[in-house]
Amino acid sequence: MIDANSKTNSFLKAIEKYAEEQKNAMKAETEAFREEQLRHANEEGTQAAYAFIQKEKAEIKASLAKENSLKETAMKRELFEKRSKMVTNIFKEAEKKLREFTKTKKYETYMNNSAKSVADYVADRPVTVYYCANDEKFLPMIKKYFANAEFAADPSIKIGGLKGFCEELSIIADETLDSKFEAQKKEFISSSGFTIE
Image 1: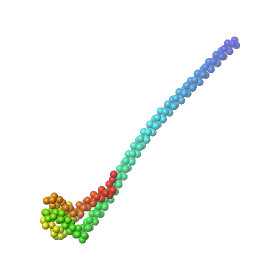
Image 2: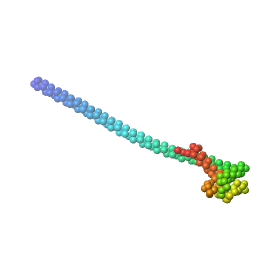
Image 3: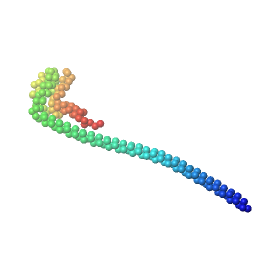
């Protein structure tokens, strides 16, 4: 009987051992599966996080670029407005000085020289001389330079000076302060660095 008990015990121990091995194998397999799943989940999570971070970065960059562009546009507009005011003030002051100049003795000399210059340019050909209405007092002095001329006040001449139109030569000899002022204005604006790029 001892022999049968001993065999049964050995058999039970063998079954327990086998069960323990199977249990350990299943545990190891489960642990390996769990580790593999964790690794896979980590990789997917890392990829998803990376993609999310890249997307967020791109959105932040786009938002900053738009914000910077709007700020730059606003700053350029503000700078343009300031420069425009400065230019307007500069030219208002320059025009004021020119109008003051037309009330001086030097302006009479200027008108005399302008009349001589236009007369020399047309060289006794028929000419129409246009002048500022405020300069009518200079007509006697101006007329002595022209042998064949008509004279007319021109409302487009606001500051002063005169110009001669010679149809025969198809030219206008412009000695007006208005045209010289406009030419200086254009030159100043193009060369002063007051443009915005």
